[in-house]
Length: 102
Image (tube, rainbow, N blue to C red; front, top):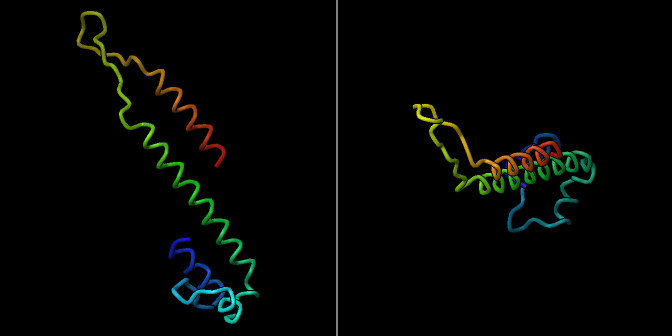
């Protein structure tokens, strides 16, 4: 979880909670966080989804690196067309499916 998630838990529960060198389950219980399990669950679920999205975006960006398109001239004109994008379409289709699953 990131700092913003710990801040959200602290703000919603009214208890200053943030992991440090002394962060243990016993200390969390002592602070009274047991009464705020629903808040922790909600924020933790959001953090998990955000992490999945961030990982997916990094993976998607890497897949697009080095993707080259051909730009041949159309007949004997100054107009160009895009060619050789079969791989790009396959990657794009995969990313659309992944995005819909999020």
